[in-house]
Length: 464
Image (cartoon, rainbow, N blue to C red; front, side, top):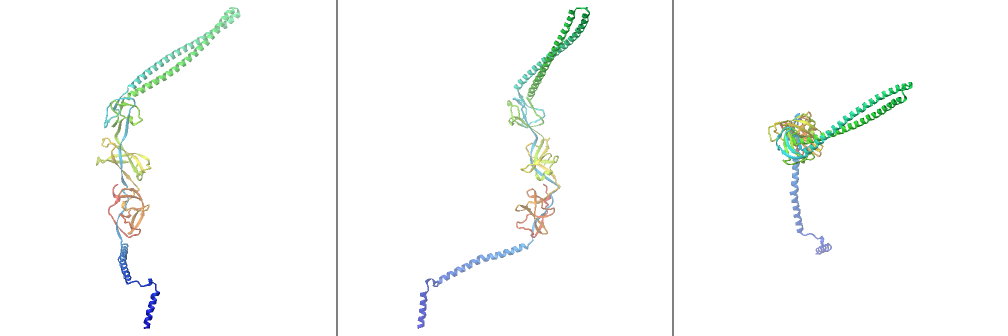
């Protein structure tokens, strides 16, 4: 009995010494904890176990794919034919467009043509009435006549001056002869006077005759000099009169030309494309602005087109090269053309070469302004390789194709040429006869085992 009491006393002592939070939790707490542990275990089993299973299945699939040899469509590349057809769009234009301007002022008296009319060389197109020009022509003719009259008057005065000069020269000669005679007489009279046969007064009279002849000679020489000066003056007047005559003649011819421009004629064979004036309209001469264009005509017996050749073909285009022109409005008809001119450089913006193609059009089937297709037959010694566009693999800045060699994939970097849409040219990176994948998968890598299923179609045999 005392031991039982002692045990109870010890328990009571321990309960008093222990704090309240060290007491055992209730049974409900352990039940809740068990429920939570079961739920977490269930969720773990439902989430993790399927993932583990799927991962194992994926690993097995990857191993199976890695061990499987892919069979993919491919194409055996070959060079394009040495003769390729290059077709370019172009607009048909007349070989020459001619604006017709007025060369004289006046009023339009009559217009003889309309748009669409075919005209011949020197055919009258317009008649212009020019009353002011006619009046100016009459004034120029009168001035010309007056200048001619002045020239004739000056020529007559010059002839008179020449006659006077000849007379004065004759007087000089006569006076010189009289002087010689008087001098000989003076000598004889000197001898007679010394012998006493005549008086000294008679000898002095002969000496006076000598002095008179000398004075006459001086006067005659002076008259000759004056006549020469007068003749030179008349010659200058004649020169001035002739210049006036030439000026008047040129002025008269100018107005005659303006009068002749009353009839405006066709400079060549062609067709009228525009008429900008009607009867009675005021006509102003000149060609400074398009507003003064009376009629627009074009030469359509020969047409031309301008084609822009890509840079990759500029080496093969030359003058004299034959071409074929087609228009959709005339199906089945091919018109022959010839390259006549080739630009000396490429356009810096489009990198194209401008060339001119001339087309004979005597039958008039083609019209200017038509949209056409120009086909060039290009002869190339360095024909490129043609591959499908779907074979291209772009990685970064590089363009590659997947080449199949010994049933293994190999990436080859290439340089592209012309793009045909579904096909492209390859300048470098591929050789004739190599096999490339037609549509390579995105996950293909170097060294992958591949069986190339070569298609029977040959890309290079297609016409361009």
